Length: 275
Ligand SMILES: NC(=O)c1ccc[n+]([C@@H]2O[C@H](COP(=O)([O-])OP(=O)(O)OC[C@H]3O[C@@H](n4cnc5c(N)ncnc54)[C@H](O)[C@@H]3O)[C@@H](O)[C@H]2O)c1
Image (cartoon, rainbow, N blue to C red):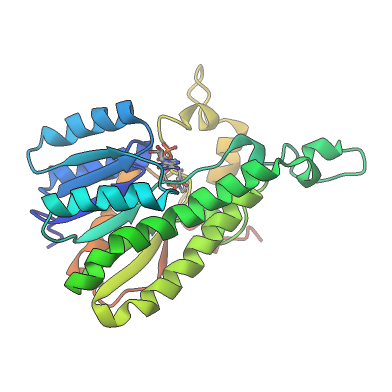
């Protein structure tokens, strides 16, 4: 019912934790993939894993903010895949200097730790990565979908898009722009049989953030982990499979009446204000 067998997908950010998990799940189910990421070595590792399931897969190290690089890659992809069934924009993240050290600016908070100490170039890089890093691949790779008159674009957003994450203004604003752009593009492409949706994951436990959420020695939740779980009505953290099942659904005909939506996969986090 949710078959992706023999369909062709492009996944950006495929060398990262979630991008790898998504790519492996799609390849395991018989899809052909063009995977993009910044780290050549990590991409090679992902390519090796997905090749073990068979299929026709290709890896491209690139910067999603460079349209010219993507255009060249697009030519390669189109020489391999006669049609493009979907694009999954996973690339994203935050540069350290784009976050504030302090959550609140009290009279005695050093200004350096507040918004006024933020590094503007890191701020721009982070908002660009999340926003333009979605817009540019959609423009470059979406054109083939417009020509073939079908396709499916899924953008990975964040809870920060709905309510800004404390200390992370650039990331949150970049993801908010992703949600808005998802709606705009969905309407714009609605007469071309192309659906555009986003997924806003809540707190997904990955190997990368495990140390922030669980105490290595005791295995107990850290104070931050406890705060997150306490604010999540379902009382747990998410795992990559929670996202993957939503992606399969959005890629399938079972979501054929859904476009322009941002689906929270967050255990109820965004529905709960704690009062
Ligand atoms: N992990 C979570 O809990 C969580 C929650 C909400 C949203 N997200 C979003 O999910 C996505 C993946 O997150 P992750 O946890 O796997 O992060 P990650 O850091 O492991 O992966 C990020 C990926 O983006 C790629 N990337 C970064 N800048 C790039 C650039 N300029 N050009 C090309 N590729 C670039 C990296 O190479 C990497 O493959 C991100 O968009 C993130 O914002 C993650």
